[in-house]
Image (tube, rainbow, N blue to C red; front, top):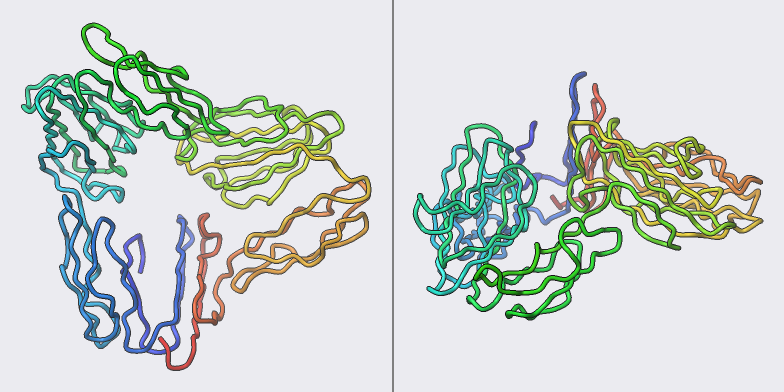
Length: 484
């Protein structure tokens, strides 16, 4: 196996399986995560159910047959039925269910998806969808997700049913468009993709409404909405979730008559994670810009956290994933960039906690102009430091801690789960300055080894970061005798 294509399942003929990873000296990649599970002999294992699909049959033994069909509105690509063969392999991969490239919609509400969403829509497409509502009504589109190859793949939305109908909007790239509303009772969506790269695609929901009401604005991402009446004269309010600020619109919008049309008084509010800020509340959340999606290129974001005098600041990393070696978060023990550096982090390896020695902490996030990632979600809180102890050092991911005494002079040690190795084995000592003698160690995936037990996980070294070059790793999976 190489590249990105893998079969749905691989089943052994005995109770042992051997895996070997070999890499060259050039470009690395994200690697792999393999889940294994002990199954009965003469079984092919559960192949799963297609996204947007339905499966008939629940037997996975030799000669058992599974049949598949798709949910309404989707087309099945692949085999409608598969059989478990004598070699413990299914006769084919499970099929996929894709959204058709040409279709008419007459239901009062529904969803329009790009073909094979969200796996990528492919090349050389020319798709047309028509949404038809009752005469006298209008149609509202809400964009839930949007990711096309910028400048080369386009979605055009027209106010009518013919190719010559007026264009309401043309969209490309990865920025999610605003909501759209038709003037009449028909909308035409035209999607064109060229011969090269593709994106994730799009997910659009629509609903129809009468002429004396405004369209349902939906609930903005990362926000809460108050108000469910969309009739003329009614209002709704939107409040952003913790860590987000309003990036479009006002807190309240009203359904009103303007220029002979019933419409909202302003754009539907949007909430986004800011690039920097000054925080002085006792606790809160710091998010990378674009969260929970990918952050943008060429960022330079600064956050300052300020606690009450006599307090320290504790930050906890809930999620962290940036481009390895290039997109970096620096954490400083003080109010600015000149303050002592607590740590510089990229990839996925971060401590569970970090603490300031004063009532200020400074964070700087810089990104280059190429690849991006999910970013981070960090919780902060104001804490008081015990005069005679260190703060809780945390526990490594995939690891264990031995020792619960954090007083000055005491030590704690760590171990890792099977398949992982401790980055450094020296115990942590709580020193007189209330700091631990070393950062919290990490548990790193091993390059090869013997794996035992009825189920488990095998990771390429460094996963989900890039694996190193020039590897030669071998794993042997051993389950109960008589199983596969």
